Image (cartoon, rainbow, N blue to C red; front, side):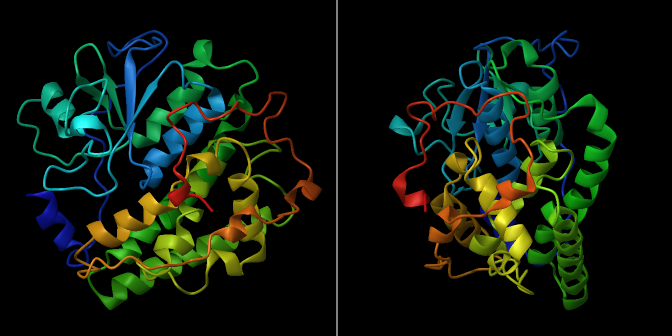
Length: 338
């Protein structure tokens, strides 16, 4: 099925997220054949995609920019999915390919599945290593430690992993994935069930965050990254495009302040491109927005207003430090920033 046919099908069948077909891991001991090695792998992302957004944030916070190069796709897909039309000659300058699907094909000839981001690609062979969006960031935090910057935070502290996993499981099911189940629902009952789940979980999460700065412990963790990547897209895409409109993020005192706190933390907001986000959702999902019209709003200036969450205490980077400036060439264009 072409991407165009697939995009037109959204909203006509119940949404089910596919498991990652390529689940190899890049590890310190290289047990899957892919050892941690500076300069060997390229992270391919779309700034529109929340799953890829997690990898972008983790890479920034941990200081892996010098160890893992970055390829950014056009937010608008064509019939071969993610493409490198933002680059000179429409080719990724490191991999030399026009479409991410070429890395998938190099790994498995005739691969019949979808082409997703984030994707880690082995630069020497041009082969996809993994598209396991759930595992990539956890491995960045736990397997790539020898290449972390000095002062990198511990995003998945061992003593808190059970609690982090529990919190993330509910947020993934009802919020991260729930907005898609709502937006692509083929009938009223499916939509109402999914949308209700989204806001029930958001309300529970707001209660949790009402007297604590972060989701687990007093520092940033993987759980905060995963929630943020949905919250930052909420008013710009999910509220209107996915019909998650019981209320806006900016109308919830706790979650709006929490999201602004993270957005203004180095490593979070400096990865976000609202232009890519809006154009991708409204122009690619033709099954639910056949005109392809992209809304003018919302007003983004609120993302930079005071949040006062520091009054709750907490230490964003624990005993570490914030990441340095965004590397040259990776800055979000002014068109995508508040």
